Image 1 (cartoon, one colour):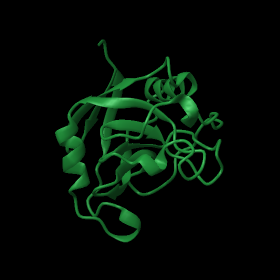
Image 2 (cartoon, rainbow, N blue to C red):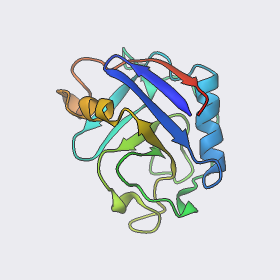
Image 3 (cartoon, rainbow, N blue to C red):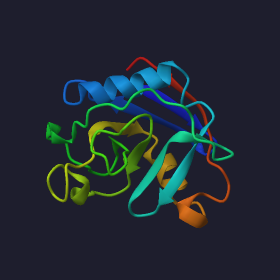
Image 4 (cartoon, rainbow, N blue to C red):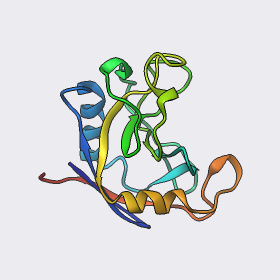
Amino acid sequence: MIRFETSLGNFTVELFPDQAPLSAENFRQYAVDGHFDGTIFHRVIPGFVIQGGGFTENMTQKSTRKPVKNEADNGLKNLRTTLSMARTSEVNSATSQFFVNLVDNAFLDHGSRDFGYAVFGKVTEGMDVIDAIAAVQTGRQDVPLEPIVVHSAKIIEA
């Protein structure tokens, strides 16, 4: 379990290492390394997703490790509350950025339109905080007008 403390409140995520071992370990290691501390949710689209894990408050992209193999074919679905690896159009390009599904997004699943986006965890506590993040005002490119900062992301006992 990983506890995120943000400027809008806290939420906890559970990882799925059995179904998405590469993605879950990648995410866990970014949390252990303190990578998420000081990042923002830089893409907020109500009724779709909130995305974070890659940019600082001044929109500087953080350095990352090498991308992980896309595990979207693991049978998990992009349902409300799940976390998935964000990526570019390159299938195996996911690094530190992730998104939380605000609704069921079947079109992001493996095979429905392309290889898909790897689900590797879910929000187990604090979905009200996720919904509050989703409700903020945004400007250009779906960036919140007031930064939503991750103060810390720490491994906690289940």
